[in-house]
Image 1 (tube, helix red, strand yellow):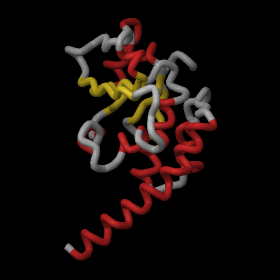
Image 2: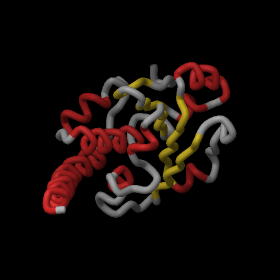
Image 3: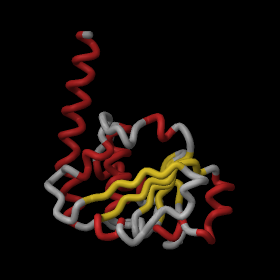
Length: 163
């Protein structure tokens, strides 16, 4: 299970880098994956490259090694140009190197925001991939992100109502 992708919510899969390698090509097609989001640190991006650029739409998110607090979680915000609802109208695989830390944390943040739930509720959903275990640093980032996304959503709903 550690080397496979799992469906976290309908159409959204989480897995390790190996889930997007040549031996898994048929599985990706049979599952209906259309987009592959690769979340990596800068130094990983220089050695790990997309395996199927002609077959799937790739979104590569490079995270600097020294990330300012909450910056990396904002990659999944509603205003992000790389990741938005349109990209998730089909089936998406999000992977990092192992699919248990950084990519799992970003999936958790995305689920928090799109479902308007707490980090604990979102993490329970993401832990469908049983090996997920964000570090204490990532857990702290999720805790800090929760009031931020809620405030943004609240502000946006007020603006829309006043429209």
